[in-house]
Image (cartoon, rainbow, N blue to C red; front, side, top):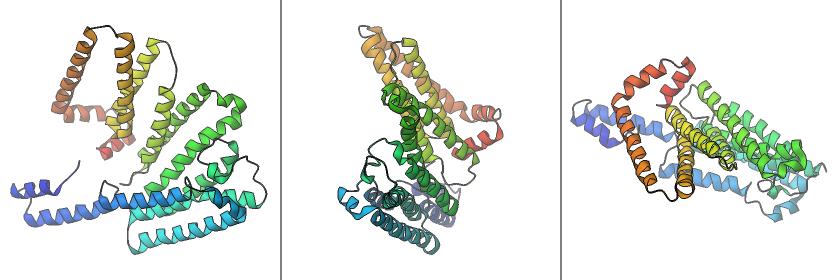
Amino acid sequence: MELKRSAIDQAARNKIITDEQADRLWTFLSEQQQQSASFRFTHILYYLGGLIAIGAMSLFMTLSWDNLGGWGLLLIALLYAGAGIWLTEFFLRRLDLTIPAGITATFVVVLTPLAVFGFQAGMGWWTGDHEYRDYHRYIDWSWLFMELATLASGAVMLWRYRLPFLVMPVAVTLWYMSMDLAPFLFGEEYFSWELRRWVSLWFGLLIVLLAFWVDIRNQSSRDFAFWFYIFGVTAFWSGLSLMESDSEWSKLFYCLINLVMIMAGAILGRRVFVVFGGLGVAGYLGHLAYEVFEDSLLFPIALTLIGLVIVWLGILWQRHEQRVSERLRSLLPAPLRELIERRH
């Protein structure tokens, strides 16, 4: 629930709390909000600057960096990583700023592939056909050592700092590994689009389950599962949506899966499920409108009635939400019930 100062002032005017309590409550909430990510101008500047710095050492590496040689790249990575760790400690210990600290700590993890590539090239062990700047562009099993090192680096940094943004490079690296492992395991067969879709679907499902496990285990107010959900749902839904089928039953099943995603998003308080599920349902309805019922006059009318029925169900749910929710939650296992209560 989003709480604004106007709502607190209204509570004071209605004599629910005193003016002094309203001021103290707003001060407390403002201080708490500074430590959690939100759509504030300060936080936008944090993430914009951080992502530019991270992109500079990953996505936007230019060809001229290859002229430094392997040992030169390793030295640069270590110097930058040292500066990143110092800034992380400074932001956390001296200024108590968790969001900038999370960004600089993530910067250190993002430097891991560069350091490993530099070490491999310096030792003459690099056998891949690509340069480092191709790491984020091409699928190649030769990147696996860099990815394993990044996962290890991310795990160590998470153990040391417990900052949620550190999960982002871990989730991205797992996604990269799913693509790079496939040609390593299946060879040339991987380059068929059908296998790519299945790899994306199953990998996404596994990451979603990992995110759910992290969500249940997490007892703090920090959201460590967010990035796992983002990349897991994206990979799962993309693989699912790109599947080809001429069967209307399979398309209906696809719509049902997306409806389940919407319900899961509502239950878990995760908007990413709702967004992708909504896109899937809209795509299926578009298929019905433009292909199955292209010449039907009744389809738009029937669809309108279905929409109104759903709105009416929303009204009924609003009226009885607390009673029904409590009854349904009482049937759930304790860890899942606690998770839902924390998210709502």
